[in-house]
Amino acid sequence: MSITELLRREWTAFRTPGRLISLAVAGLSVIAAGLLFAGATSSSVSDTFWFRYQDLGRNGTITVRMTSMTGTITYPPPGHDQIVAGLVPWAKSGIIVKDGLRQGSRYAALAMTGAHGVRFQHDYVHDVAGSAARTPRWLRLTRSGDTVTGSESADGEQWRVVGTAELKGLQETVQVGLFATSPGDLTLRKTGLGGAIDQVRFTQAVGVFDHVTVEGGTGGWNSRSVGEMNHTDWEKFHNASGAVEKDGVVTISGTGDIGPIGEGGARGVEKALSGLVIALIVVLVVAARYGARETPRRVLAARTVLIGSATFVTGLLAAGIVVETTQLPTYVRVVAGVATALALCAVFSYGLGAWLRRGWAAILIGLTLVAVPYAVTAVPLLPDEIADWLLRLTPAAGFAVKQTVVAYPQVTAHYAPSAGYFPLPGWAGLLVLGAYAAAATLLAVSRGFPGSATRRPPGSPRGSSG
Image (cartoon, rainbow, N blue to C red; front, side, top):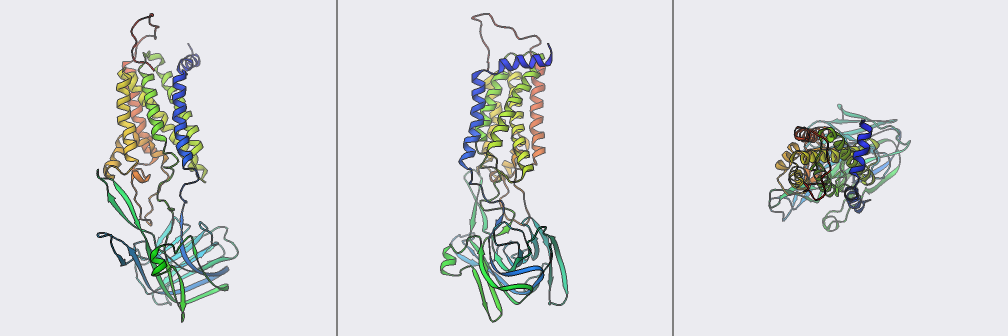
């Protein structure tokens, strides 16, 4: 019998109503859960700050002296019951060139930070360290067409270039000025089993500047927030975010952040794929029961291909519907990766069933090694260290393919499995899962029935079946 005929025959036997309905339920569970969060995904970047600005043409320079930087942190540990003076490490205040006032537009900024000295940052993900000096400090941004250069100085005479950014496609007229922003103060609250829940509190940064000069600017100064601000009691009753100018001294107060992780934290596509755990359980059960049927060695490969292919198509359709991203390569990687991971889980569970010849035993092992680690690491239940090791050593490591979260040094965040961050890159996770699937398949081959499957006489006892 040719391979094509064998696959056709086995496919005819595989597509029972029970199996097809089960795979449909697996796909629909991903789609239904994903649609609940449709349109509710967090913004892709943070872009909230107070901005005192004027227009700038294709060539120009802003120069300032920053005389001080202070701030406020609400309810920090250990007491969580007071408001204190201080700056979080990545609070920022300085000067910025921005391509429009809309959130997410391109920019280049030179700023003093709370604990990391002078930094030149642009387009949210790029960060260049300047000196570790504190205030007072002179700062300068120079625009020449699409090129923006940031420089710093101790005395306003001797300048040192910190960094240069090529911002392709800048408008003829951009906005330039002073800004202040301050991300939330992050601490982790331990849960009963050792997991960690993020706690983020309001903070504010205040930068004070003098000797503010702009060459190539047009129009007068304007002041507004980029993003929402002035909603907290602290801002309403104590110190509103904003800009004040008096006798040549400008004071900027602001909160928020300008960086690569948007509001809602580093969750990536986690919400869109929240139904994946249900699909995974269904796939493991169906594949284990299918593998527990009497399987001659010569058709073992065909049945492995069938269960893997059917699951891959199911995962591809479901993930393809719910995953949302503006970047096509990321979309293809996540959707194809999730489908591949589900298919390998099915192959693993099928191999267990064919090896053990007991559907219930294969289901129990599959759920224990795959579904349970995946589920308990997706929530802040276990200590981060234990969750990391589970996602390195168990087949659940394969679902690192859906990770879109990147750990940025210039962002303080909870980089843990419960926040959508896997300890292994996607390719490495798939290798771990693939090794488990290959091992289960080899075990199944070593114990496969040598001959052809035969029909049982009517009334004869039946073993486990799918």
